[in-house]
Image (cartoon, rainbow, N blue to C red; front, side, top):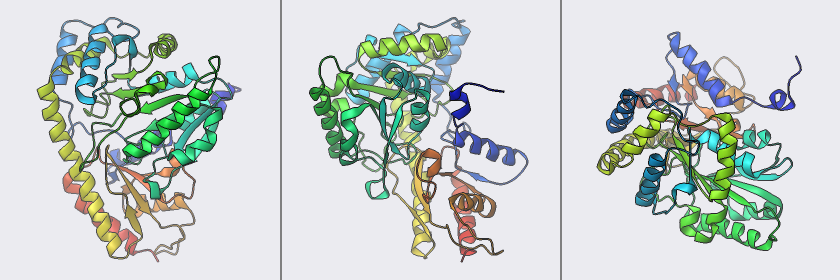
Length: 418
């Protein structure tokens, strides 16, 4: 059966595939420490009670018809107030677009800005930029971020490509790494974008900046979140934010996200999404509009939520550092933000107790799953080279009492290698 070139060449999400395989093995009774998906176990991390109550009340009021294509006015007003209070950014309701989470908004940004053959700059490892660029038949300009830079792209890496680019896609805190931009690092990138747009003529397509800040509330140990518009207000006409309730309130299934950006760009994104029907459900919109006004409830939830996430990230990081100090081939980047820990499993080329050689990183991933019962996502699933020894570990489904057991099983598996 012959189908479209897009469907024949599009690669499905390796993370979703891996997560599905792990869940099936767990369903069959296997004990696996599943750190693959960027999601939450509601039994460990429930959504705020006030959010749940507001959504339920909206359903009881039979608010189940179509919402406004751009998002209901009351929700956009609440988002504007929320963004002003927590981030210090002032956006009008015509500069806010609501959709069912961040994914359709990112898709709409790519569709609204990029033509076939346009250059898209993004770093790897990063979440899904390679797939979205493929959707629009763009030219991939891939920056390989390194451990030395905490896997965040630098202005010097971007500069050689910027004159011919249409879209620069950035994310901070970064998925999959859980690392963040420094103030100076992001300022330097913003200055590149501003200088490039000043260079282009009035009739030229401008260089736009997609800034995914889905995890920005979740920073730890004094790490501060920075955004382009706060640092360089002149970049506002070229910047489109992506945000949502999904991660900050453990509400991945509630499906309410928003973009902030220049009204003309958001109007085009709205037109695209109106044909897709990717709006957030009416009742969820009404419930979130009410919840975002409950500042005391938000502050209390964030305090406890961040403490629980940080405890898990720090506990696993400290355990891995102990294994490293004992001479085992592991490493990790100190946790900064989000729900992710960047860890290194430098096992390629080693031999198992049965004589099997771990020839490549795929074999390493399989060995960790079979011998340590540890399921983590390799960075090559996020566009990094296939031989990258780095992995994303997500703690959204992590039970605190299982951390010690997981580390012990990992240690035993590592000690079997030679």
